[in-house]
Length: 404
Image (cartoon, rainbow, N blue to C red):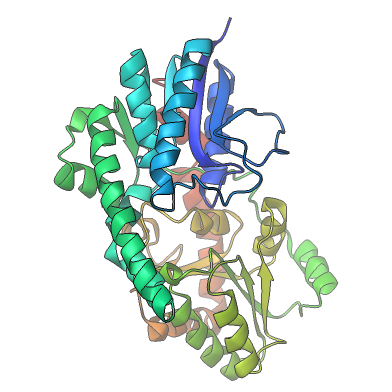
């Protein structure tokens, strides 16, 4: 009979880059364990997972949303009560929290109460709560009285997060981390003993995220009305201030004015939707920049596979951008900022270009270099995929979970 583990995550289906990582954690553990999930989930979501829900929500915007103060405190309390009940019923061998903040806290408390080993997998939420660069642009985007309200809310939310992070670091048994920024927080700010820390690398399904042949790229582009000789630039991310969108758009505008064969697709949604649409309309770029909104995994793949260049313009990153790795696996030439710092290690000039944050000029120059150097762009495409296969394969990720 298989042992049981519980994976606790705030929202379900999984948000952002966590989607691919949690899917692989499930695959890695399902051969050895009966895997359960504890989460906030819409009532109709099932698929192959065993899901236990915190409350009975009708959507993700809930009166116990962990991203809103003081509802995050209700989330912690309800999480403790539900997980304690589940632990008594199923007797999980391990509890795996998919963040080191509010979810991590309720998991760690239950772990201590029931003598169950708790493993925290931190994808960067801790880094975001400690980052002024992450929060300041969000507040600046608010208007009028809402700015003061949001600023006050942010103070309380971050203060509660600092308490949760510190308690989680003390109570949890193992903290699995990735990235320079996160490691520095745990070692220097939280003074976590090194024997509690374990490193892991993000992984990419290189069989799913794979390049297409030239004939297939041509066919798909024709279906979408994109010229085969076009330079297609791909931006896939949350449309939020920390993604550096306001530095990216002027660079794209300048480039498009100079090159008739440059087209751009933007995939994602967020609070900067209106800004991007207004920018496109103001600069008469409707036939050159396409804002496609939020797409599913298969749709994102189709656009990555026909793209030439992928641009990541984030100004407050942590760990590594999974979108960058997926683009590299599909054979895109990548331009990425040095936030997170790991990009400086990942991209070496042969497999991609690293640029400073907050610089429309740097984005423009890097794009211009690739457009004017087709041989360099092709070389980067080939080397990008080789890098992902060698450094971010499933085997290395699975090895980091082998102790469970």
